[in-house]
Image (cartoon, rainbow, N blue to C red; front, side):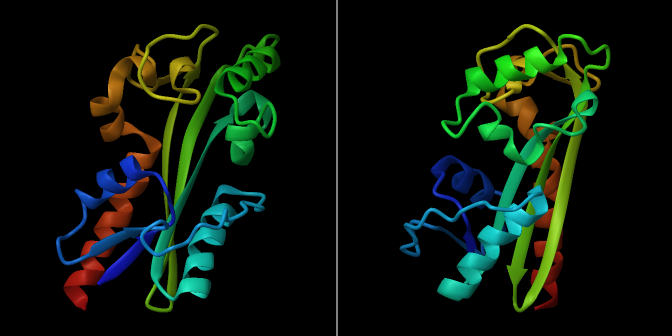
Amino acid sequence: MKLVFATHNTNKLIEVKQLLPSSIELLSLTDIGCTEDIAETGDTLHENAYIKARYVRDHYGYNCFADDSGLEIDALDGAPGVISARYAGPQKDNEANILKVWNELKDKTNKAGQFRTVIALCINGEEKDFEGIVRGILIHEKRGEKGFGYDPIFIPEGYSQTFAELGDTVKNKISHRARATQLFLKYLNQLHTID
């Protein structure tokens, strides 16, 4: 079975490919000739993930899945959420995004929040989504060299180091994306044994 991951990110593709059953051929947007920038116009992570997955299904005819992730801070009513990458503007500047979070949290005592990933799957005429969440706290200093985005200022529950300090090996086991991916893969494996 061919399955498209609605991404141009080669590293993401390789990571997921290693986890899939060998009977599933995983393709990227590049592999199917999709060069369009699929606009993420949804108000939620669920909507954005489905926009991308449905676009590929409707325009290219493939079974497809897509993901969207965001940082949701309790004291900011869930912001930055769906606009996490563009929080400080359309340029997607990680440094500016972190500075904006710090500025908005400076008078708040509650520093708790969560990373959330949603994976939307369009397969064989069906739609299903999977969600992964990791709770933690935000700190007012950058720590660690690994990771990206808000990783240097987010300490996941049960740990004393930021995602950027923990590194990929630990992060890929406990992160929001890892948790959503585990549920997604479990479903795919079940589906595949039924087929």
